[in-house]
Image (spheres, rainbow, N blue to C red):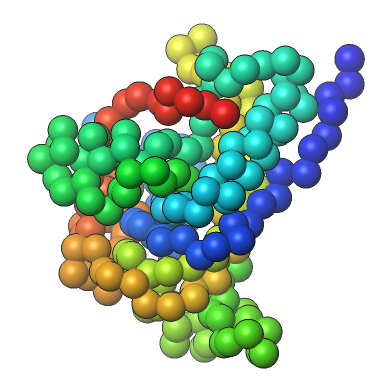
Length: 217
């Protein structure tokens, strides 16, 4: 039986807060002090707009059911978590969970390739895509806590082995800086998650915690 194709691209209508960005240099996940898997770019995005949250859940459901007709999501590993659960995990690790607001959806997105970065220049001017000297000059705007509009591509994947789950990933395609936000950790340059190779600042307070969202779709 041929697999139904679905367009997985999605961008929120309302800006989001970007946490623990790793968009300057690809880094591998660290496990037991050793890099695991391919180096990747990554970020976490706090989605608070109710319409965007509903649209993300619906889009992920469409992508999953295009690959596995009738699946209800309870057996899948997904790329988002409820803000309340992230806050709980932060507190369990002795961290402040206030960066994960109640009612929000936290989307984790990664990519093998550097996402296209741009800065918003106002409603009457197209976004300025950054490359070369312009990228070097503006990369500091993409810090832990800044306000952005991301573009994701949701993709369903099969389980890798008997001990893993199938699921839906969010690939990070683009990030447009919109405005400054309250910095997390007081650093101007955040280096992804605590368990990423080379990361020394702005630790993700939920890194290492393991449980999925109880409301998958």
